[in-house]
Length: 341
Image (tube, rainbow, N blue to C red; front, side, top):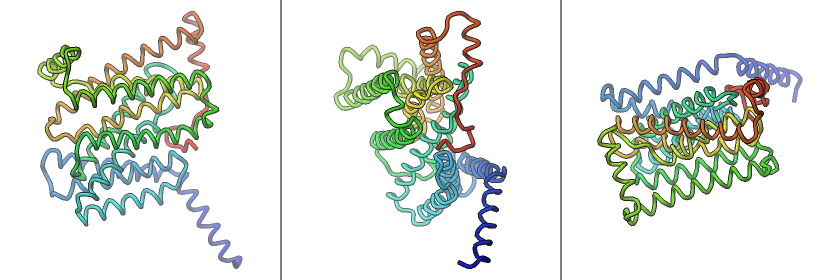
């Protein structure tokens, strides 16, 4: 290679590094998300051309892919551009299977990004903020999923996206937590309990769907019907009992020990549920929104109780000691806009 070519390559590399260090990529990303969200909202309210929601889905899917790959320490420009190109091809070809595949990809990316985009939280209110932000990211992803107009079985779609999101987020957390060596006894117990709650929730829902309610769950179903009739919705159990509490407790724990990432990983149970929440055409948009809000509020209360219990069992005694522990809590972790790996 000639010296001139080597110099040009070095100059181009320096230019790319300067661009990456500037704010322009973040500004362009924010513009893409806002523009895509605006296009998706036009589809919800029924104004504008028919192709606009699909274009919004492509913009959000590409932006979320870019952000997730950047957060994972990969090549965001390459994969973000590829996601946009594939999304455009899906819209042009207009095949049901392609639309469904794009919807699955968007749902999984949104759910995983919502979890991986969180940061450690020293105090409870900061942990609650992270759960709200993660839910918001997943909600934007839910609009993008609907914009692709997939042809699906709702139950199969929910199981498939939850399973893929779990695999993806645990693969990333495995690297972040230094493999299974970073678990320790405490982390192993958390993973086992979280996995058991997840399996029991899914198994119960599947048995209820296949065989119908028995005498034991009649009162519970009456409560669900009452909530839907009088409160407008009922929160999704998997997000309320597992996903949101895991986000709250996990972000709080990450400020203190690395096992917190294994707790945060179960937060994908909430974000995947939110990202797929609009796929059932028989459920009104208002009910979907209320269900997400109710699940978030109850999940925050459960997460707060878990944090209080954790601090009581493992934290220092006394108010001053707890305040000092909060100020000292600051396990190093990259900022929200930086790569984790």
